[in-house]
Amino acid sequence: MDYQLLWFILVGALFAGYAILDGFDLGVGTLILGIKDDHERRLFYNAIGPVWDGNEVWLVTGGGALFAAFPAVYATVFSGFYLAFMLLLFALIFRAVAIEFRSKEPWVWWRRWWDRGFCAGSTSAALLIGVAMGNIVWGIPLNSKGEFTGSFLSLLHPYALLMGVTTVALFMMHGALYLHLKTEGALQARIRGWLNPLIITFIVCYALTTLATLLYVPRMTHVLREQPALFGVVILLVLAIANLPREIHRGRDWAAFVSSCVTMLLLMALFGLGMFPHMVYSLPEPAHSLTVYNAASSDKTLKIMTLIAAIGVPIVLTYTVTVYAIFHGKVKLGKDSY
Image 1 (cartoon, rainbow, N blue to C red):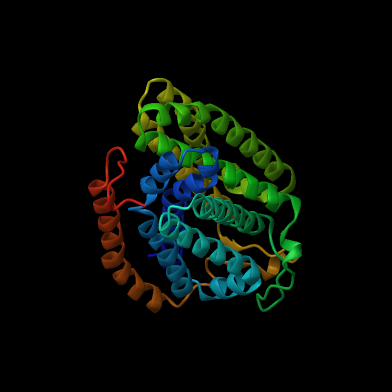
Image 2 (spheres, rainbow, N blue to C red; image 1 turned 90 degrees about the horizontal axis):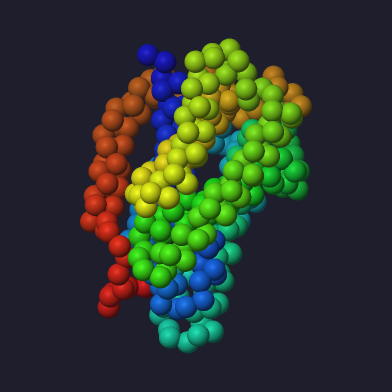
């Protein structure tokens, strides 16, 4: 068995799970200031309240899997992107604090301050995730030891920033679809009015990112040229995006949200296909790149980890499914609400 390939897929699946689940949390945070009424803002918080912390388990699990399966990649990325990841960590922490503290006091100024912090933390986190992915696609400078030789400012180039903006647009769309699913009445009608503009914004950003990728990072399409059958992933992605307004028009909230989840999954699949076998592409010295095979742990380690994953991953999936099953349906405010 090709354990390196197996773990490349598994790590990708864990990060895809995080993007899908915490993506709508971040999207809700980015949209929070679009609502002025305090009661309606509380509905936003309580729509994600029971699940946001569980969603972040996927990030922790993905990071742990990356550390164990591809330690060289973990070391290079987390040291090279150290400042960026510290900013991301701060944004996620501040967002969590805002959720918990926002309704502790009834003062208007108190709640508005935490609302702004929640929005800033969510937007910053989404932007930083996109910038990090943009740099992985573009390539970063590595020396012969696989060590990052650039600086924080060198990571803020136009392509990475475009990817960051696209990620924010994607999460906003995803979050709005989740809110449309979880709310009702006048608030749901208002959110429905946001959906088409947000979908159009994402499509425009994604089209620009795709065009930039084709022009400046053509190696990302190499696998599609070598294996034409994989172009089916692109076709499925286009169909999933096109299905969003169709399901919204039919009033099928759940189907629209599922289409958004499938869109994100297929985007991550294209990202993985384009990168393989590289995990960290070295630019301008491709020979220094970290790949699935030269950066992986030993076969013995990967075999042991596969057994652990066979036990751990179903537990995470069961926990996630159980939480969403318990808190399904429209969000309501009660005495224990945020």
